[in-house]
Image (tube, rainbow over all chains, first blue to last red; front, top):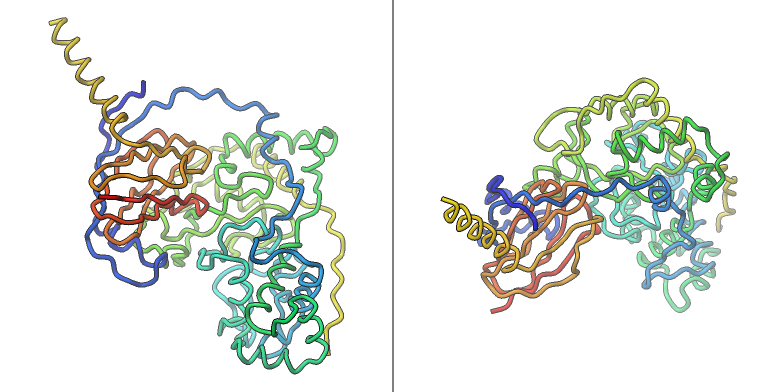
Length: 361
Length: 106
């Protein structure tokens, strides 16, 4: 029988009133709330620690890429999407494509601290990789977009990024003769429009999957695929260092939002959930595939090396009310830090080259 | 004295069991709500039990039934009762895959 004891009262009137902002638009919520009772401790009993084989089983690669029912895969869509992805004419300046900031040469990021947008102006956040985005639950560092199709159109229209109004883009693409048959093949009977444009780009993005890394070979049973040091790093990753509380599963993320205590003024997810204290300074947990090729790190690109990243987590970051409860000093030794870095480096695959497509004229 | 102790134990046990038995419980183990949907009567409570290994932040912004449990540590439970009839979208602010619908009826 669970044992109960009163712990703390959790009635959050002001927080509740503000919680709806962002999720359901900008309507200010009245105080007609649900009633929150007291919080009780519950004895969940002792759970036996999982063995290494059970933990490894949670990291097996999926066999197929998930595509949504309303935008299923076709080769024609993916081929068109690839051309659009690499086409600089999607920006108002005709100087930037999606690949400018999400380049296969840099693990599908840009290798910069923060992105560079329209007019070569620096953006506020690091360009995230688009590797394995087919498995994403929510998009952008602050989760402001719900689908990859919405995401595909976001940077195109954003004044600071590609700065291209969609009606103007549709007109520009419609004036390029070789695009017309490609759109017709991918979307028979439909026009070049924002929906077909987004569907094609998102379909191509979903095909960008991290390839097999030494880590995968080890997970599948090849004990020689990674070093003993890296194996100890994996145990730390899932144990003492608690990395897997957020970086879980084969893509090493649960897409959750956490304030990891970086000294940045950016409120991140908090912009959309201003009444939820834990969302202030919270950013989406990135996956860790190809992480060795994706420096610098964090949402603001503020840490140059994996060693610095481990040091940040070991220290626990800035202690503030919004900081995730999981963030606390870890007490890692120099050897343990080194083992964690060794493990993280096993997540990089031998990426095959990505051919830049010949673009329609 | 022993009788009093026994009496107290029975009462306390009854309260504890009662707290569980009266409410429908939503578990959160494995970053998943144990039900995608649930129907309750107006004024009745749901127990949100964090039996997961990580903190959750259960909340709703549905009009008339807004609430925010804040960071709920593993090994704690909190009851929430709903005042208004209607559909209440409940989610975890931290984990975007955790969503469920509570239908509140008269």
